[in-house]
Structures are given as structure tokens and as C-alpha cells.
Length: 544
Image (cartoon, rainbow, N blue to C red; front, side, top):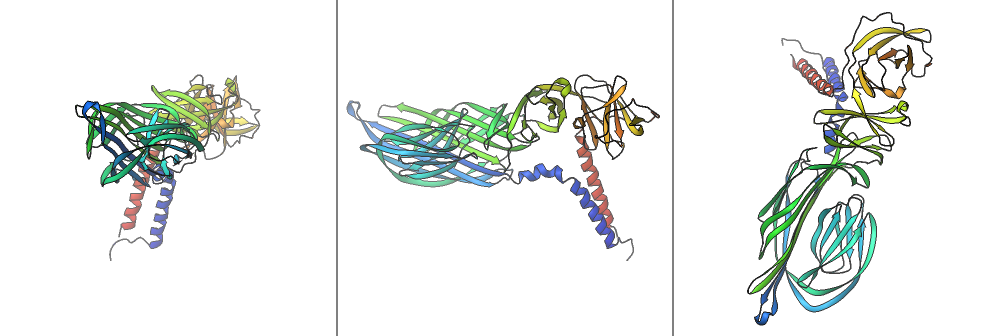
């Protein structure tokens, strides 16, 4: 056979080299692999209580029909990232009120976990709804029909604390009881007088509903919609920044909220409901370390209550419908102690600093580093942070007490190669000229892959910077300071060297370097180079 065959050992070596390149870029895909660890939990309920009473002569009334309609859907799965169909069960009950007014004495047990799982045990019968209210977010947490002592397990979102309302059928009307709701177990005793009812199931059917799983877009208004009966409710909602509870910890969050009135005519098997309905959409996206999205919840709530009088009958209806969707991962959330509010090109941004010095934010966090800032009486320790939104970047300095100072990204005016004498020994150094005031950060490409110390020139002598004030990111030396105009990056010196230094002695300053501003596109260039390298390797392997 003609041609050049690559020996097997060379092929193996080329494959190993390709894998080595790929391993360098594995962290870049961590955001995508993290999505595969997300779980979606979805619950949807529609609950309608309808009463129709016929007139007799002399304006007397006789009960003609009382109906209770329930639709419920529950779904839990790994996050798919696209819409999926979920089964919904539909039940229609005919309710016959008795002539018995009974007093029910019993306990209501509530058990709420930090992850939002709620368990309710009611010793009082005829329970049909659980409605949760927290931070002005209303949720239909459950709908059904319990005629005896049973346990309800559901999921709710409670932003710290809230309240829960239990709704009971009371003959041809409804009775509500409200209790405070917080994380932990609570037991309440209550006494209710209820007209005993005799429900009978008259129909059962099912249908498919579509559940969307897409994340909201950061700092972009949301379009919300909810289908109920033969109507579609839509709303557009803008965003606000806030701190919201997730698994017991406050984290930066974006909240989209839309609400209003909608004229609807809804058909439910044997009856219909017409008139204005109140609706409320709420979406909360939570952000963790480095501004990474760690999940979101979406809540829809619709309610309507009213009555209509006609010549031969009166009708009343009470409707509640809603859904709650959780898309969350198994993320450990550290507690935070420092909060800062800034703006990036007029967009509000929340930054929190955790107890382990991590940075959380509603924006993307590109750089974060603990620095020494005693010059400004910042109590020594401060946090240098760069965040970005929609391609706009901003550096800030945040102190331990939450004060915020702007930091300018400076471009070195000139970089030359020189020699600097430290402790009577000459070292190669880069001399960097900066034109800036107040807090600045700049970066320089290193000359050598060896230890170095950064000095600044003050009154003709050089002084070492605190070693926390310079660091390496993507093979760039980043330097933060309340600036001087001249800096020296001295190689072959460790931060433990003596700080008693003489003035610089330049022996050569003809070689110059261009300063490089912070640019996240370096990662993109690296990926392009990687792809080209892998293609070349594969072509070499396939050559005969």
C-alpha cells in the first residue's frame, strides 16, 4: 500500500496531546454540566366552587346544585431545558349540603422545610385548598377534597416567613382559617362550625398541559402566560433586584412580577364562570458564587369570587388557580455578611460577600480578589470585584462595612525592561508607567514564569506593594493600588524579601511591551486555537 502510515505509538501520542488540551478547557463547560444536575418540580391546581340556587315564590330559595371542580398536575424530573407535556387529572364533584351544623375541634399541624417542602395535617374535615402568601406572592399550594384526617405534602416558596390559609367547604359556601407560616414544625388548635356535606364524584377525566422549562433571561423583561379552561392569560413583567431566601440563605436575585385584571369566560363541565379575575405572575432567579445562576422559581396565581342574580336563580362562584415551578440544583449556599448595591450602565446590581470571601451577584463576576487597602482607612481588608452586564464592565472596591469605591481600569502608558537592585543584587524588572488617580487596576503580561514582587516608586525610592494587591488571571499580572505613577515588577524576588530597597538603577530601557486590558475574549481565542489544533491532529491521524 502506498502512502505514509503513522505508527501506532505516534497516533497514541497525538491522541494523548489532544486530550491534554481538552482537559485544560474542562472548567469552561462547568456551567453547562451544572445544568444536568438541576431538577424541575412542577405543581398546578385549578379549584372552582360553584353554587346555583333556584327561586321559589315569595323570594324563598331552595338549594338546587353545588359543584366542586378540581384539576391537578404534579411533575418532577431532571431538568431538560425544553417544554414537556404533563398529565392533568380533572375531577367534578356534586356537593349535597346537609341540615347539620357541626362543631369540629382539632389541630392543624404545619411542617415547613428550608427547601420548600410543606406537610399539612388537618383534623378538621372538608378541606379543599391551601393558599400561601409570602412577600406579596400568593400561591395555590394545594387543591383537593379531604373529608377526614389525612396528610398533604406539597412544595411552596416562602421568602423567610409568610402565612397559610386553609379553605373549607361550609355547606354551599366557604370558610377560611389563616395561620402564620415559617420554617419548622407548628401546631395550632382550632374550632370550626361547618355545615356537613355529602360529596359524590360525578366525572373524572384527564388532559395534557405543556410545561416550559426555559430560564428567564438576565436583565430582560419576561413574557408570562397561563392557560386555563378556554382562556390564555398573558402579561409582561419587568425586573427588580433584591435579596431572596433560598434554602434558608439570602442570595442575590432578580424578580419579575406582573399582575392585573383579566375579563374571562371559563367553562368547567356543567357550569361556567364569568367576570374579571385577578392574576399574578412571579419569577425569581437566584444567583450564587461568581454570579452563576443556581435556579429559579415561577409562581402563577389567579383568583375570582363573585355572584350573579337572575329572575329565577342566584349563582355564586369562587375560583383559584395557579402553578409553582422550581428549577434548582443541589447547591451549597454559604451565608453572606456584606451587601453592596451598585449600577453598571444604569442597571442595578446586587453584590454580596460570603463568610468565606466568595462573591455572589446578580451580574456576572469576572474578577474577585481580597486586597489590602489601609491607605484609605478601609480597616485593611477589602474586596476588589469586577462585574459585567451585557458587555459593560465595572470594577469596584467593597470594604468590610459595605462601602463602595469606584476602581478605574488603567492602560499602562509604557512598559520597559530594566534592572532593579534589591539588597545589593540586580534583578530584571518591568517598569510600568501609569496615569491614574484614586483606585486603579491594570495588568501586564509577565516576562518569566518565576516569582516576582511588585514595587511602586514613592519620593524617589521604591516600596513593595502588599502581596495581596497583585495576582495572576489568565496569565496576566493584575495590580491594584491607590496609584503611584511608576511601578516595577521585579523577577527573582519573593514577597518575603527585605522591604528596605534602594532606588531603581536602569541599565536598559529599550524594550517595550503593550499593556493588555482585561478581556474575557481570551477564553474564546483559546477555544478557537484548541479546535484548530484538534482538527489538525485528527487529519494527521487519518492520513494514509
